[in-house]
Image (cartoon, rainbow, N blue to C red; front, side, top):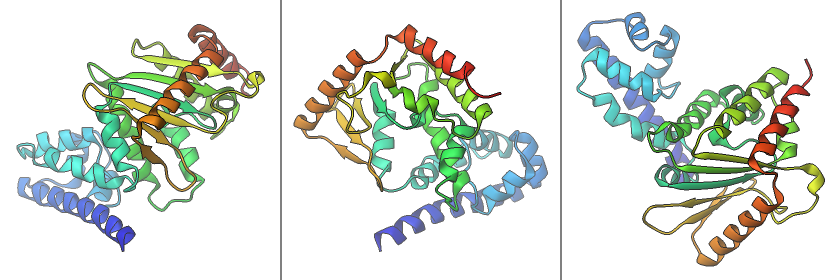
Length: 271
């Protein structure tokens, strides 16, 4: 029953947004083609948003509001549309992630979502054969908006070398992804470090996790799982996670050497 309610919640919000878009477009007396031009998108995308087959982006919503002169009506609906596009178990983490001032992430198999390119994310999500692939991609990319803020959170990322050498989506997709990591590492608020495969066993061997710290409120730990992840707020869990992360920082290459290694891996990709 709960799962059905979640599906209904997502479906209802998308349909309502789509129906409102149609209503406002008709009220303005314009077609999908004109709206597509005004929102820097395609007529096909406009059609899919209106029929609740695609989640609208923040930029699309803003441009549609402006073009249709809605007084910000669609922008007020958009947060709910995005919220219900995430799986129910992941929503609390996404909301906390937006509020975090410090994010510390450790990944073993793949690049963390906040640094994924769309092509890399598509290659990963395609393997699950999800019927709502485009929606999953849209909301994953939307999470990255927090890095574009005037004052973004501090982002600390520790990656296993194996995650960088695993060619996902082909050499071109992987090259773009590695460059994305290098570019991110050049930003003042982002630190990227790599644990070399030759390091052997270390404190994070049991799996990926992330910690979120806030200006106000207690920090939390997010631990990945096979079916779904879980948020932990117990002080003991947080203490263990922080100590583990500190040990991982000691095991990882320094920042500059980490970036150099990523660049070298990118050069070694097959042509």
